[in-house]
Image (cartoon, rainbow, N blue to C red; front, side, top):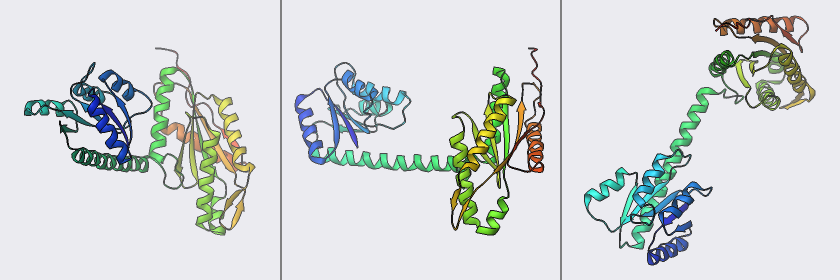
Length: 311
């Protein structure tokens, strides 16, 4: 745990520093409010801050307010050190964002107890954040592959179509089907099939741009969303990914397999009445054509919509 000590009293700084060193904590010391704020704004962000109420430059209470007002990834647990004992003052500190306070002069044993209590709260908060993030990920991603799930990839498509309409640029959709995947499950078992799906997902991610979208559409079908790609660019990128899929064997339980994919490409150019469902249908038609023509190939449909330059 990283601790910031903001204290203008040389005696208190020395006492707190000695205690924190004996207890094995990682800490930095500031002797005024401005120096403390520089630490808080820097790369070394404390987990817990011990802030004297009365500090030159910026008071401890104002530091609490600034900490709470800014957007930050990690919560900073704050303990205000003060000789004030009036109830209204203590309430003001809590309302400013302080998590706890310690009256001066303080007992080192009490200081340690409050720091440890703060650490427990911080750890519990991190567990809650991790649990929330896990739930959010599970709600939007496919468990097997880690790709976006069907609902989320279609939502991604809708957002990109709306963005393309505003920015007057095309959006390409590629519907992908893993060729003869049922044979893998039937011949080598579902564990081999799972390994193939996971490796295919990894190769998709490695072959796409950071702002492209990829999701599992269902079973052995996937959706690729390529913002800004016209037909030529989309066909080029789809074929590059197709070659990436087939170039190396996939090591699976009890088997080493070469996988191939068939792809159907549809292009959305901007129109006010653009239908996501129609775009998906066109991509599906192109995919069917690719499979009918021998698989392991990319086919495209005609433009779904024509650019309408009128305001």
